[in-house]
Image (cartoon, rainbow over all chains, first blue to last red; front, top):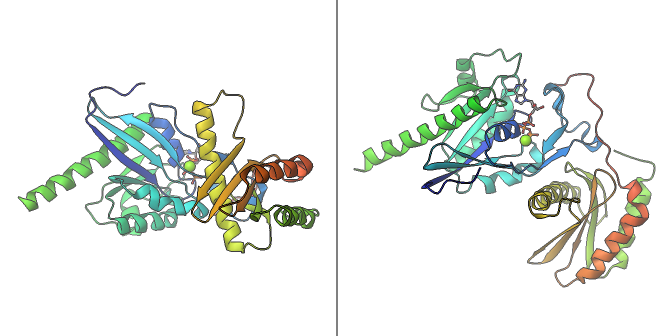
Length: 192
Length: 139
Ligand SMILES: Nc1nc2c(ncn2[C@@H]2O[C@H](COP(=O)(O)OP(=O)(O)OP(=O)(O)O)[C@@H](O)[C@H]2O)c(=O)[nH]1
Ligand SMILES: [Mg+2]
């Protein structure tokens, strides 16, 4: 789908989170262009290093970053960058975060601790973010448990999603954009 | 992954670096960014870093090939020049890449030639097979 001529606003958004939480899946689900894919088959060299045990059927991993694009309406387009989840590629994160207006932290409640580092880096960069719980089967914790476990302030939106589903993933992005607008209106109110 | 031939492969990498003017380090890595073997002038940390970097570079270059190439294949060769050095990466055997770091003023043609030669000779051993599905679940 070509980019509409009416677009006046492009926002750079990062999707970040631990290994195998569904970041690539989400970018692929919503992108209107062929997504840039840097998936590589996980090799035997990673035995004992990568633990895809919980993500059933996961055979590949992101070795650089995902890229996709989605128009939310005639005016606004989001440029989506999916971060790599494995620690050896974290050096890419700081570059991805620069110039980013907002981020989605995707979490798998079976491995919540994997999201701490992402939240820590975003806070360091002062990048506004929301948290989306990817509903894998067997996710037991309630959404409020997640808020407690991650010590998220009340003003950080926290929602459920299915990263494989286009409509659900799009709702996550709209929640983020709404949050960004709220923050900027709040700032303007203080300044004026 | 350790193979009986690891020592021989490392030896081949060492001789590539010794016999090629300007070449400083050589490394074989899996496409998913983990080191398989490397020359001894490089620390373990440097080898781990370069493995992740080279896998990322090749994956992004693959994106360029998909979008702008003729569709007949992957990435032949990547070269990155930075202040103080040059990084070369070529496809090795299945699932693996060969990376060489060279001095800034190295002969680019010569290094590329030596790398291709090595891959022709021993590419069949420079491999990283896909993982077997895990039977036991790990947390
Ligand atoms: N059941 C279920 N499976 C999912 C969901 N989202 C992703 N998956 C699967 O979980 C696996 C992980 O997805 P990826 O999108 O590769 O995860 P990632 O976060 O990009 O992983 P890395 O880049 O390797 O860190 C894949 O096999 C997906 O098919 C979901 O909402 N429900
Ligand atoms: Mg991914």
